[in-house]
Each structure stands twice: as C-alpha cells, then as structure tokens.
Length: 322
Image (cartoon, rainbow, N blue to C red; front, side):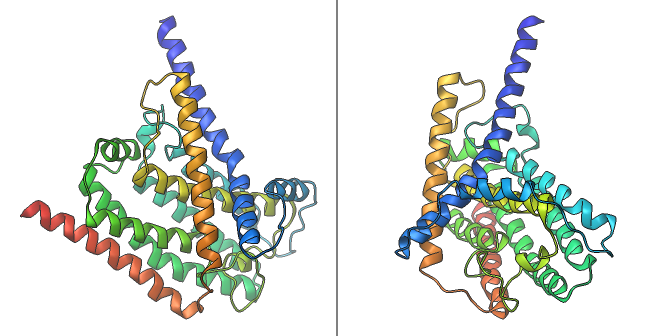
C-alpha cells in the first residue's frame, strides 16, 4: 500500500509540474516572440521578461467596471483563464502517460477552447459598446471556420493513430508512420488554425488598437486590472497550447515515456524548451515576412485550412478502403 501511495503521489507531482510549467512559460514564450520580431525589424525590443512585469502591473491595479456590466462580464476572465489553462495543461509537454493523460483528448481540448471563445464573445457584447460588438462578431465568424478545420485535423490524426488521445498519438508518431501526404496537409492546416485562433498576423495584429482591424482587442477594451491580467495570461497560454500541440503531434521526439525516471523527465523538459524556442522563432519570422490581410479575406484563409484537413482525411480514408 505504501508503494502504491508513493507512486500516486509521484504521479500527481509530475502532473502538477506540467501544469505549473505551462503557466510559467506562457509569458516567456510571448516575450520571446516579441523580442525576435524586434530584432528582425532592427529594433532593440523589450526584455523577454516584460510580459511578467506587465501582468504584475495589471494585477496591482484596480479593476474598473462599467455601470451596466452584468455578473457574466465579471466571471468571464476567470472562466476564460481556467478553461485555457486546463486545455494547455492537458497537452503532453515533456512526458506522456501522466496521471491525467486519459483526459488529454483532442476533442476535449477543442471543446474547452470553443467554450472559452463563446464566453469571451458574450462578454464583448455585454456592456453594449460598438467595439465589443464588432470584435465579438468577427470572433464568431473566425471560429465558425476554424473549428470545422480543427475537427478535420482531429479526424486525420485519429485515422492514423486510431485514437484522439494525445499520448497515444505521440507514441504512434514516435514509433514511425512513414512519410504521409495527409499528415503534411494536417500540419499546414493546424498551423493556419493556430494563427487564426491566436489572433496573429495575417489574421489579426495583437500589437494594434486600430478599430477597423482588431478582433481580440476589441472584445477586451472594457477590461482592466486583474481581469485584464487574466485575459492576457489566457491568450499567452493559448499560444503556448498550439505550439505544444504541434510539438506533441508532429515533433514528439524527446517526450519521456510513462513511468520514466527523473533524469528522463528533465531531458524531456529540455527538449520541450527547445521546441518552444524554435516555435517562437518560426512564428516571429512568419509574422515579419507577411502583411496583415483584410478582414474579409480571413474566410478564404481559413477555408484553405478546412479544405486541407478534409483532403487529408479523405486521402487516409480512401487508402484504408483500397
């Protein structure tokens, strides 16, 4: 009994480490992306630790609320942060087979992100400002195309791994599935969805407040203080989630297997850190080499992801029949 109890405590500690790791690294990832973008545009840029200072500053400020704000407006930052943190913590980062890995399902993660987006869109319309309504309507338009594309990507991966559970998918990918055109299509589609979901260039520019172009910023203009800090941290967690998802599914090498020792787990953490750094650099290079598109071109951009995911699913389905 003592051995089982110690094993259970060790598993809980590893799972807790993963939850705290994604929470601690999310602002650093955002700071690294900003730093690389600044260097690529021949600017010095702020420190990579600036997002931590921004969050601390917001947490120390008073939250100012509109007179007509309902209970939903107050509750959404906490709901958004909780759903995004849980979704990010479910993705295997440095190891597979963790104690909560059974719940690390792609469909569950998609549902959590969809729920967070739904509540944020409601909060944007709650106060009744014109900017909030514009941002919410644009967010719903983007999500109506991004979510079907994400489901097609899930189907493609499920046909390869015979499961939607991320630890199983990572194990199958490590074992080797060969070069598949369908997986390449799924990777490109996932990259497009990740850019749209995080409001990055060319879909949105997180560094601007121009009313004609902003999507995410328009929904959160009425927030301040600790509420805005939670929303910003949730956005940073969402960026880390998608980079972790790409790393887990398509670059799963370095993940510690179930029951691995402390040394293997540390190596897995080092590998995860390298993957996050590579993802931040690639994102910064992509954003500095492309211009933001018009809002009315976004459906075409996401439609390409939907078609790529559907084509990958059809290729796998036809290959199984033949």
